[in-house]
Image 1 (cartoon, rainbow, N blue to C red):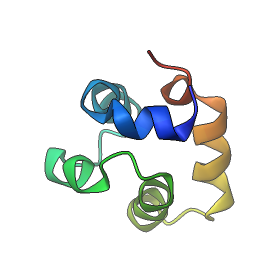
Image 2: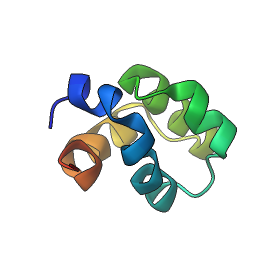
Image 3: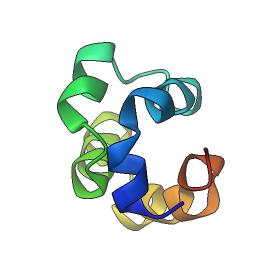
Length: 67
């Protein structure tokens, strides 16, 4: 699943995102609405990680491949 598909089915995918990153609130996930850059930025802000780390994780994890 590419990010256009993730964005289009965000309501289904955000449950997986919530499991992966429990620190993100439902309101934050609603506001992200499947936008990859916003998700990476928020993960960076919450976890104080380098931007590359959450970005690589997104590419690796099932959220990208979820149906």
